[in-house]
Image (cartoon, rainbow, N blue to C red; front, side):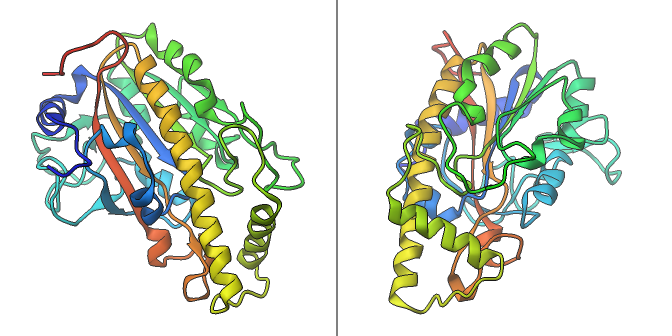
Length: 315
């Protein structure tokens, strides 16, 4: 195993994957996170899940990517080495009964319903969700869950890139989320982490320096059709600042995930991935919503977390 793999993690995860029905499931999407940002960040709690994988998203923005994820299709890992239960031949941890009729592999869990959320609910799981970008403020996704929380910009916010404060993110409320799954025999918990989406608010709630704030706003203008000249030295410096801001945001998310994993009441299979990435001026592209490599290539980790008070490996 690589240095980014927890000792014994693969064996523990393989055992859990054989029968997901005996474990809680935690699914975390890191909004807009680039793969190279994840590869450069110091993320000990994510590293403990297992090796970082490069995957391909099924959507270039939040709505289609989460529709695919809730439809049972996690971002597609194609590079080697692969998990023996999630590979080029077997790309789903969960198979929906209404999907194409074929034999369900030993390493997939059959769920009945139109989405994995409905499938877990039908299997007796309590389903709890939390979102941080506007796609989760109302509509179809929140309605899928027994309980759903939205911590993010309101619909009447005039500036979507305004600095967000501490408490404005789903992962600022890990004790509440863990408490809501604690009373259930089994639970499925979904969290959309918006920290890695612009404006990349620091976890302390402090604003970035004025120059980084200027760059985020200039980038948003380029995303919306403003003039961007990525070949200039100034633009390259702007790209570096954006990468750095997103990396710092991810490292704070990792700290919060450590708190969440510790607060969980029981062992859980944890899947952490980005819904899509972000272009920072490469070949003239900025933002997301276009199928370029910086947007479509995303990070993924899968592993088992022991939960509060559990000191032994899951078998």
